[in-house]
Image 1 (cartoon, chains in turn orange, green):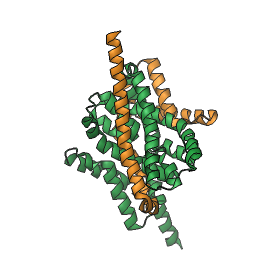
Image 2: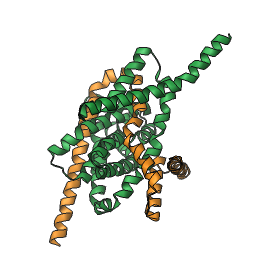
Image 3: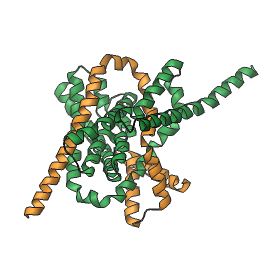
Image 4: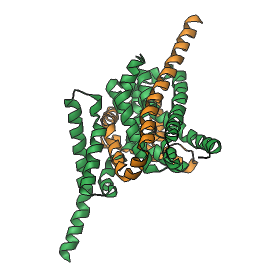
Length: 119
Length: 244
């Protein structure tokens, strides 16, 4: 588990450093994810311990968002003033985004299937 | 004097431990309630935990900074967890490669929709300029969203809260919405939830299936990438057209 954690943190570190040096506006952990993915593809194998640790971490992914979410107590005044705008943006915009993404994706998949069948 | 120094030491040493432990216990309680409710989406463990912890802090008058000193150890794990998303992606790579074009087009549509619909709706309802700017990266995973907010003139800590509430909305409502839209493909379900509701949505998608989780995880990474590139451009366009 410690070895797996060291791999995850090490790749995040490389990602952060790469972003700092290159100035590319991509977050360090995302670069780390791309690196880990590339290494796995290249080695064509996934160590059991790494898989276990990653799955444990991901199965409690929602826990990791709680500390930042509690930050809501710092914004009481703004929330009281602008609750309607914020609520609409968070609820409606999120639903619209889910719907548009899913429908567009489904639509492209259908077009691809049709072209494959006809062609 | 000695007694006072002692008290201060005890206080400082104990506070990170206290709030770290309380956060874990509240989360476990939230999970327990969620399971007891038979997996009712409305008992979202994240939402429950945030409400409980926020109420606790307000009642005891403990400032957020003190709380965060302990909770930061949990917050910190967002980084390695993001790296770990490479694993479901690796395991489902064949399906991802098959769906390459739908993924890219869906991502573009979803990412732009997320930004414009949030800013547009809040703008129509009288949101202040800084609130609007804080809303721009609302569908992106927390650490990235905070960075984007800072860059474009929003309030990073407000963005963090918006991002998490957005995630909760997505986790609670997206599966029902996708059912209503007759989207059955788990890859499409996962990807749509991930684009709109990042990691909290992904936690939900992982409950649908490992395949849905893989596509949600992929969506987090891709949307983080695209939004950090798009946000400054879109904000500049909005500045020009609406004098934001």
